[in-house]
Image (cartoon, rainbow, N blue to C red; front, side, top):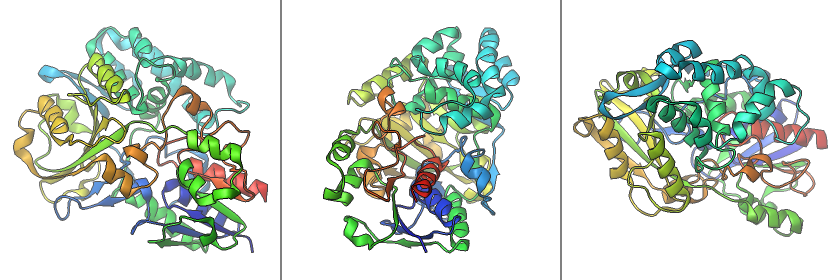
Length: 467
């Protein structure tokens, strides 16, 4: 029987394992942490009974992929809030995205037509567009016409694309979703991730997993075990010699970790490329237990699982520019999650989990807790008084909890124009390491970050083809 070892049990490692096991491969997954899941772990880190997601929280790109269509993850349930995401502004103003393009546009006043023209056409074609960008960028497109408009938007700097909007609300709304790129908004291709996530909100919504993001990993592991695979935790792999002699090795690791594990087996040109691989800015996370929820002045933000907290487009642009330059902004971009609005099982009575993280410079050694709290208080006066308890995770803790998140980079690689196209290195097969039977399958490979599992799925498909 063909055997495989998967190093790392994040969603991509588990997707790779499941894809191989379904084809009759005997699979063992080795995880260094005490619990599997990688970026899909959840825990009670503030108050007993209040469940927080440790990293990924909303999953707009996980619902309709080649991986999700092949595997029925029984027991995994998705839930949506009334509002997909919002962007509050001062004085109770703000903007919100609903599932309907038309209803969203209607709330944007004189920018309604511009918003409808942009996201209406993308939403209609998003099923085809998604199949194109959820794979290596260098390929012959099956739907070139559908991809054309999306590609044109994606290539633009987010600040340039924002010029199609005239109101502060619409411009801020676009800036917030574009900031998911962890890139300066004035840089080329900084619109790509915002265009994808913004359109996904209308096509699929921004759902959360019932029972925490850990439910994604648990469902994948349950199905893997049905196929005869197994997961071992507490096993740190530092050398290829630890793995025995499997036919296939899948590395759900950073490129630099792959260099360390493979050592002299790795061709010099590949080792050099992996060492040059660039990581992005960091994240500083705060988990709050809040009595009664957050008293947002912007009412729709009280009904959204995802809230972008950064003020105007100009403020978001300045914060992302400073962060990229290594300067901690006084008012950072904060991504805040209120998952309990869709999944009440995460709360304990009237005490609710709030998961927030700020974009900070890579390897930031300071404490951003107050900056994050102040940003929330700015748009939700009275928030501080409702905090029952909070727990902070600085960049060094995030990196120690997940070795792929170097310097607190939770996207496992900077979304520069070069790495959006050629990650982790220029190659016809971006998953191949140059070592026979060994493949890289982490978010450092196409299509990049997210709990969609497509990096692992595609890497495993490549491995099976290699067999």
